[in-house]
Image 1 (tube, rainbow, N blue to C red):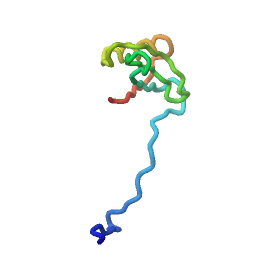
Image 2 (cartoon, one colour; image 1 turned 90 degrees about the vertical axis):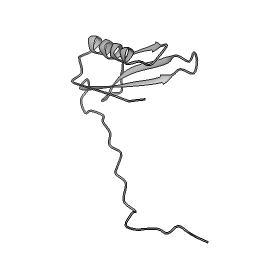
Image 3 (cartoon, one colour; image 1 turned 180 degrees about the horizontal axis):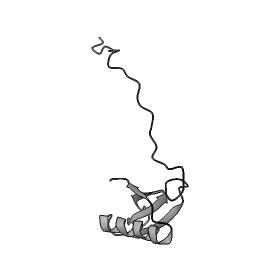
Length: 90
């Protein structure tokens, strides 16, 4: 007994994955957070969207906005202040 029926009107092609990577280095950075498996601390890294080079990073007791701003600020002071800032939301 088959209760489900395929409806061709509802079957649509899915959109391709849209990447936010930039063509030129230092035009945008990407901020990632994850929990360390070793000491359970929150680890953050600021990556260049074009080259994926790690510009700055650190370990914290908690993933907070203040710590994110500190990482982005460090990357901006060490390298060039990026034109855009994009980040993942947890």
